Image (tube, rainbow, N blue to C red; front, side, top):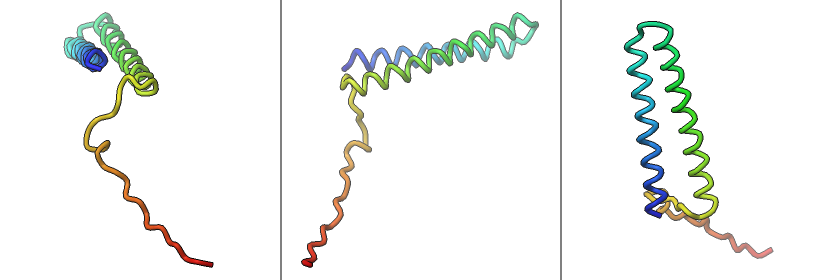
Length: 86
């Protein structure tokens, strides 16, 4: 479980690094080369995000990862059963 969480955190860090790289090249904005580097960094970020989404989906579907948090602690309220005799 800790390995999967670590992989997700590492993937988020790589996504943030790629986003920061795109921002740097966008601000630098010297020529067409910088524009191409910005597009490449954003493409890498989108690819990493899609891979992370697929990984999380597979991990949840196979049971490697279970949801945690306040939403999992709330139990649905059962509706009252009407036992009306016919």
